[in-house]
Image 1 (tube, one colour):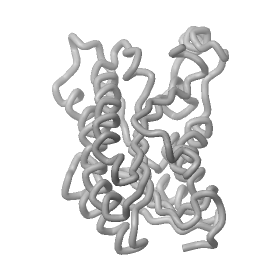
Image 2 (cartoon, rainbow, N blue to C red):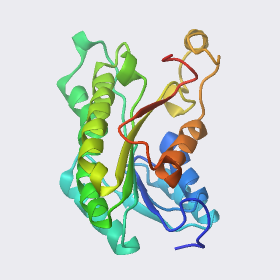
Image 3 (tube, helix red, strand yellow):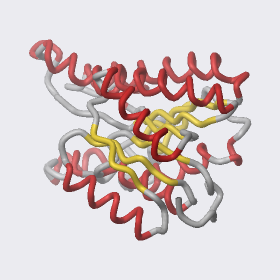
Image 4 (cartoon, rainbow, N blue to C red):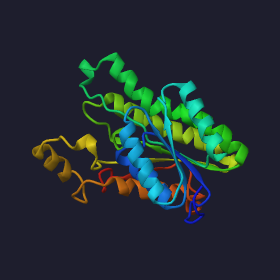
Length: 252
């Protein structure tokens, strides 16, 4: 482990889907705050390696954890790898997600199952493993990355909206279960964030989307990441079971 500095000094974090976008921003923000970070990814090894390099430049220890969070055995192996390297898990950020857009009339079963499998079932698998560790440690932080889509709905994204809404219910149930073990569980619901996911939208659609946001701009991954750092820290020790929106006032 690196030098013990920052509000998360001595902590070990796992961020799922951390190779790029919001996940990478979260991993880097946690590292800046002093945490060592396990970077979970599935396919993009090059992007994951870049995240690891950036964490190392911050003076923290990083670990690459390739795993499909839909697979309970892969998740079990991922946590075993982290425990072998670091000996503990203090922070879990369930960020992994995928989009497979279609009108509900034409949505394929496999696209429904994929999106719910990654965002919701994957989060469950990770929470199940993390909860056992955190209960023994008598403390921990679980942060689930939901979405405004889970609160407002999103056309052509019934699968994604259902997964993110389910994640909110999962957050509240687990928060109640783990509170007496000093484990807090919260959800962050980003609005429209500048990532690869929206890179290809047309200028007209971008303009229409921005008009719906009271702050009149899209968010940045760092806007989400800094809130995650707060929730992972002792500053948020009396906050649990909550959904915090990072959306420029979209859901006001």
